[in-house]
Amino acid sequence: PKNINRGTMSGNDVYIGVIKNEPTGICDIPYESFTIDRFPQADYPDFSLPENELPMFIFPHGLHLLRRPHTDAPMPSFFPFVFTGLTGERIHVACLTFYEELHEDVVEKLKVRHKRIHATFRQELEELRGSSRKSLEGSNSESSY
Image 1 (spheres, one colour):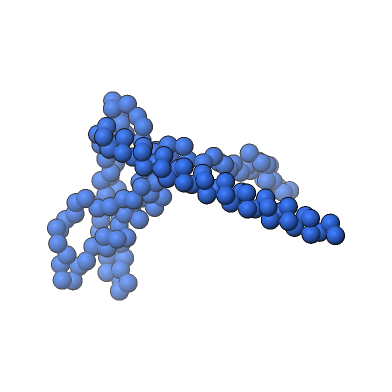
Image 2 (tube, rainbow, N blue to C red):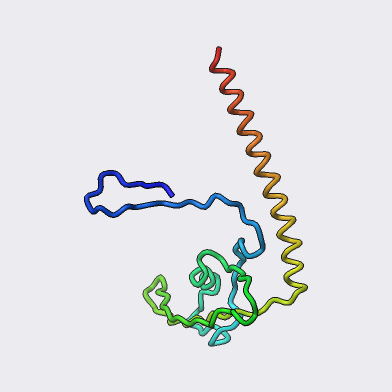
């Protein structure tokens, strides 16, 4: 953490912390969320559920997996909210979030996919670091003339 106080009169220290680590596992990356059930099942002529926006509102940072023992799963949670449409109409929504155990074959597929994506990300990052070093070396040699 770095102390970012600049003469504050309150006397409270303010610190900022930054995490610089790369994602290391399948629980560290966000997954796309989607609606699995709804009521009413079909849109009414004057009512359309914003299904594309709904997951983004409920999970704005993506859906994350949790690694926990089966006996330590989080309890389901529930919260209501209201969407307001462009013309001012209100859509009342209730969200129920619950956790389910993933089958081992799904976990293995996610691990394989993650290793492939993580290897590609690491390779691209190294290429970017290499090209930025080369450009810095080039600018240093040009400035020494």
